[in-house]
Amino acid sequence: MINGSLDGEFPLYVWQTGSGTQSNMNVNEVIANRASQLLGGELGTKKPVHPNDHVNMGQSSNDTFPTAMHIATLLEARGHLLPRLSRLIDEVWEKAVKWVDVVKIGRTPLQDATPLTVGQEWSGWATQLRDARHRLETALHAVLELALGGTAVGTGLNAPPGFGEEVAAKLAELTGLPLRTAPNKFAAQGSLDGMVAVSAGLRGVAVALMKIANDMRWLASGPRTGLHELKLPANEPGSSIMPGKVNPTQQEAMVMVCLQAIGEDSIVAAAGAQGNFELNAMRPIIINNVLHSARIIGDACEKLRMFSVAGTELDEQRVTEYVGRSLMLVTALSPHIGYDKASAIAHKADDEGTTLRDAALALGVPAEEFDRIVDPKAMVGEPQRDLGIDVDARHTQEHQRAGSS
Image 1 (cartoon, rainbow, N blue to C red):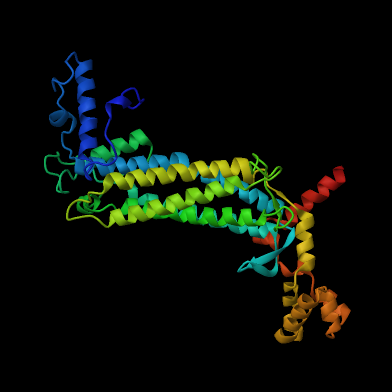
Image 2: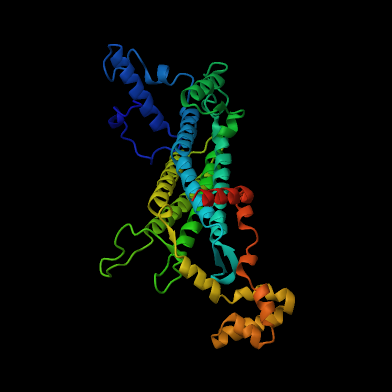
């Protein structure tokens, strides 16, 4: 059954009784029939192995189904999503290190702001994803606790003493996961709060990914009439009618995946609030949405890394041009000449189409003072230290390479 040979024996839909009883009984019946067949019995006779008396012994759908939900969620998140998310984070961080010293203009409310480096910007993306990953990993701790052993309503009726502990230990051995029995089976079966927390963690990852994907496609807009600081890989034609057009397809795909995951989290949250007394009967829809979100987010992370981030290049000429044209460099003058005069310089330059320097000199700022103060490289702080780069070691390596050359 595990290797998929009997998949055809599971005809049920997600849309079934909310406790998952039908799926649980389906599993019980397939196991009982296959075991009976192996023991020389006939299919459908319930002999010598009975689906309820033997396979379901000491169990209830009310504790097995949530246990299966937790294990499936852990396997999907740890085996599929997290490795792909981590590889994407590493790729983004590599770009941050590569471009750590390239000064660019920052933007706030889609308007020009003070400078930072491209590496600082990308380091923000990488850190945002790391934080989202950490929150998801924290949420996954909640589903390490298993309901098995609570049977019908959490009391453990018809299960032998210690059943929950023994089965949790065996499942931990089989899966390699640090599984444990839930200390309170009434909470484990009456709620699905652990699954809701995981779904919220997935939503958090989706929110971060959507922000980054949108930033990338804004920065790649153009090439002639947009920002075009980034040059994304041209994976396929972008238009069936406009020759040579290239679209940010991987970013658009990521945004759609994230919207789907955010929507699915809303469903999970609503379903998680539908618990009544000793059972939340919204289990199938919750596990369906959580597994689907984890799968598509993981897939999208891998595709974005492979087909976009890894091959993304920088249009340094355009980046440098924007730095030279920016009016917000005047911010550095503000502490020296006052906010109002600095603002007047910016408006004068904008209204007259002149450079910031020309406007400043026209309003009485000495050229020497302007050139000393308005230095974009001096406005970005210490980008290498911001990224945790060992500056001294890097300089030593550069000197060594220069010497060997």
